[in-house]
Image (cartoon, rainbow, N blue to C red; front, side, top):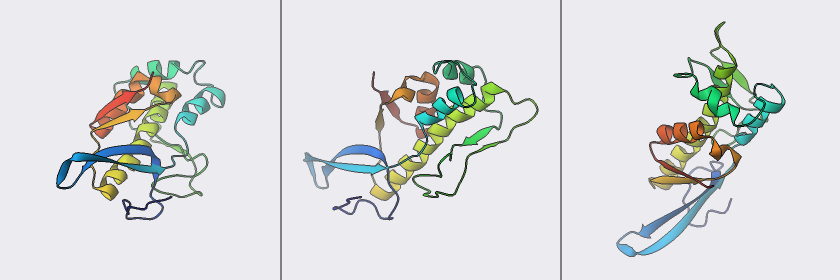
Length: 168
């Protein structure tokens, strides 16, 4: 990762690309841009896994309906470390897990946990970005197949307490 301005203090703590436009200190009329970048290993692929490997959904848009059918996750969480954890943890040996299941856990809980896992991963890296760069992110522009999931986008906005702008 090229970090010529020294924006990131901790080596190996990089995330999905985010372009931040700011103003130079003492010169509010001169904007400049910074780009922070890194890797989250499993985001949209989590939804594909629900459909193709677990066969919990027939169509991708079913995930939104199932997740929205529950008032909360009822303590069920997914750690989607299918190929290890990317930023900010960088542990290739961690493996996926579903935690908090009970006899009452159904497919809606697992689907919701999967969608929430995407938001948690993004939250972890965005929070680290804000800490490392000392820049508060006021809104997030997102794209990709998972951004059409309204439940996920609202959950992400709630987690980050920021505006999410999804591409169409």
